[in-house]
Image 1 (cartoon, rainbow, N blue to C red):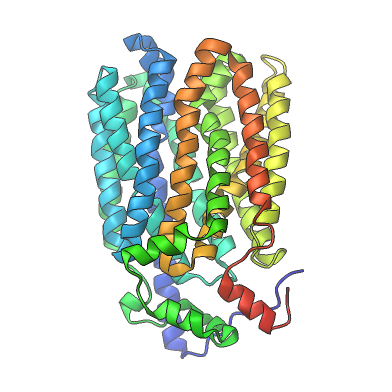
Image 2: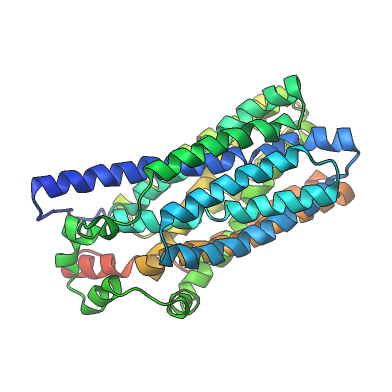
Length: 446
């Protein structure tokens, strides 16, 4: 049943206009900013075949680079999540993008695995400064009644950035060589970091504006004394960690994210190589199929966010479970599709991208819902930490499976991971934000 609660502001038109202006400015800034992170992140997967050929590096070696970077990224998500809950999102996010850009430039000058490992690992460390500040800003500028839709719309920024680089990188690769796949995005990201610093600000309260709950009227509906204290008092580092790590549902969400990322990063990191070697695609066709994957991901995330807000009253579990079950079936279909059957393979990639984006989007929303907005960045970061443990598995683990057992082992592992993700997500089936649950209960909704 769709929620009947309506956003109602009790403030003046001038206050509403100022709030709307800063909310819109914040939203498009984090959209552009987070897309920029992917320009200097997804380029590596396109360069892998050329790097392996040019420098005689094995896929297991590349897998080591991916795994080390994923481990540090996962740790960084939690660390910078806590920092993001305490300090300005503007400074954390801009600094991360600028440093990631420089690491890409250094990658372009590298020729040996130790250098690749160091610079790409540091790149992912700085990449982890992108997501948690966005999670914080979304929870402070949008109410629980709308955050699923807005979060999913923001989440398309990483698909936008990924699609741009996946489309542009083959051109750079063919005309300039693989090193420019790192040089050019790195320089572009430096200018985008300057833009982000100019545009971005922190929470409504930092601009002397009312909270989003007051602006939308949700605060007057919930009438929860615990919630009033919660939103007004800033947590210490220890309290933030206690709120997040002491919540079993946040753990369920995090463990689900681990398996979601095994599926997602297998296709993001190894997708072009999988299509080239396993399905007979050319470099151009593989690029088009990966663009289809990313474009479908945008639509899938948007649909999932909308359904979780409007159909399931802020519950993220039902949509996520269904997506992961269907994703497992589509991976199986891709596994058994014929080699050189480009249309069938493209449809499978498109559907997998559509389905896997829903849980990937809603897990972050669910973590923020369950931990409250005071610890939203930490909760999103913690779920990301476990997610990138899955990326580590999809990095070295996939490279090892390819070298030793072939692509069939990769497909089997991905299908099992999809099923495990669905299981953990099912444990959060009826959970939603506490303030929204209180408001719905008082208003007579379920």
